[in-house]
Length: 160
Image (cartoon, rainbow, N blue to C red; front, top):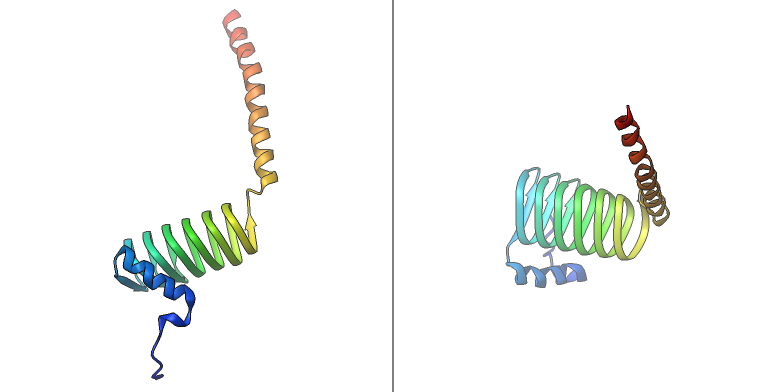
């Protein structure tokens, strides 16, 4: 085994996570090959696990799944999430229907809707601005047609 002592200040994100975890509660949670309903801690590390709801300052996920995540920083690899609200996310081979973040760094991300101030990397979204505009225009046109057609249909059935 290595006698290397892990120093969290080797990585600047870990240093920030250490400081932020003390602000929430200085508890760190490591979950491996387990499923749970709710996790609330300063730092959370998940490997081949599942959680319904996670609230943390720093989250690291590998081959895991989560329902809803509210975090300051998220680092995930080969994982799936129901929804993410975070300040900064680093994602690799991740699928999530909804992602709201200030900064997104992605190697491979598949999402239904993405709301972010800054995005870097390979992101595939269903609702691009053009698709959202087309969907809205189609919805408006359907409402206009229905508004014009429904009075005629109801008046024709009353006349009989």
